[in-house]
Image 1 (cartoon, rainbow, N blue to C red):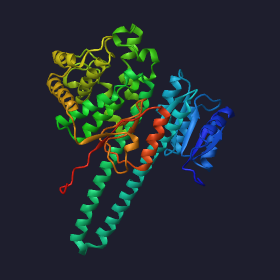
Image 2 (cartoon, one colour):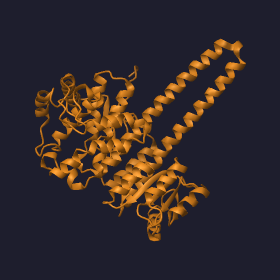
Image 3 (cartoon, helix red, strand yellow):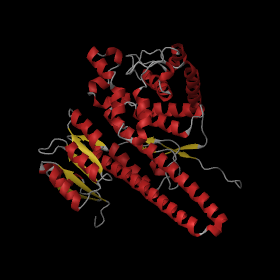
Image 4 (cartoon, rainbow, N blue to C red):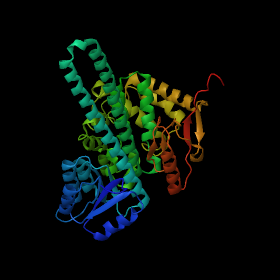
Length: 441
């Protein structure tokens, strides 16, 4: 990569006019954009000049898009991959997700702004992954240096012991940071997937908030809480293979054939995640989150304690949110009615030992939301200043996660947010942590 370009993009499409169109779309961006009209040409280009991101058409002669992306993933796993596909090309999309492990798929004809945003998010995710690799390499190097010190500096036992402790602390902190980055990336991926869902069906943020609050109230360990949060972020992944009409339809209004398809979405979600090793426990939670305590659920008819704990918790949160949105019954069930009636189904639909504590958490969350919080101040992008700290997740109008709670504002982020406001023709409300008053004030 040369010049002032921040990344190299490879466009693969058997139609040269599509490549030219994408090059025009991206001409004002800091990207070097090259093209290939076949899978073989794309592989050859990657050998001589590897790209940071590949955007590949789904349907091409000789070698289709998922096959090209699968080969690129095998040879150059660091390269980000985006699939261009038609709305009805579900089989190719699933193949690309399973084999090519794509970051995103975009439907033809694409929206230039949405495509540009997806590219920037893919490259941002790539930066996180590369930073993780750098930290892992740094940790390995530190371990090697410590081993050398152990053999050569036996006389400095006390000093070496202190160094080992410091290195272990650094390693633990690095691992914690990497785990946090992975969960954040999962939520970003979730927000990208939610763009496929109607606005009235974007449930993930509410479900994530509820399971996190419940996990905190029960003092679950960090690993289980992370798996539960990832499952909440991706539990409806399997629904993205449906058409728009089915997504918008409550189960009670579905035909028998549609209901059969509906009952398979937890398995589809699990299958799509099984290739991602850090998400395998979350995938199991997703598979069983529609099981019922009395054994009348799906997909496996498990009952009682045979249902994984995470799945029992996720079902409570999903039902609580989806019933209020009219996603289970055609009637939207009000919040207060859910609080009163949900415990009546303990022992039938829900774990009787979890239902009451869950409702207590729901009430607590509601009470906290209604309390004025003097430690949080609402800002717009014009009033933001560098070094401010984000107090609540910030989402775009289409549900994309823009900034995560705890993020530190920089001037570059301020400029980006203002650009996004212009693109979406909207104004963001950004909640900032109020710095504590000094003792001299």
